[in-house]
Length: 104
Image (cartoon, rainbow, N blue to C red; front, side, top):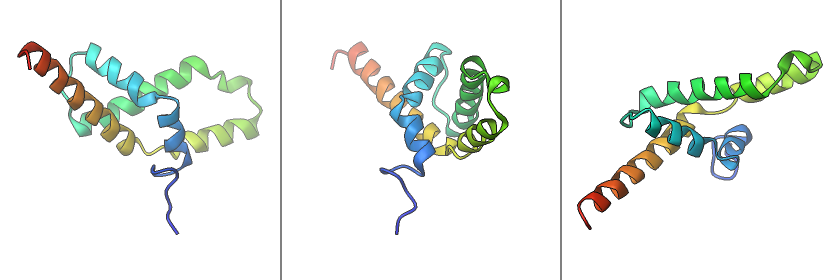
């Protein structure tokens, strides 16, 4: 039996992809004019999500049970996998940009 969910590490990581978290992170990474580096990307992804989470989730207003469930789900996201997806997206965008610039 596989421990994956729809081709991703787990359900939580699949949800991050479903809701286009990697696309949003890639866009912000491009706007920051950074080059794809997997180690840096993993940290960038986690930092991006923590900021997103803090801005959109009023955790203190949730019952303690819901806080614990939500926190557990967030910690289960495979940020390495998300970073790899973002890196692939960035490389693809860079290649397209080079093709356009060189008229290919």
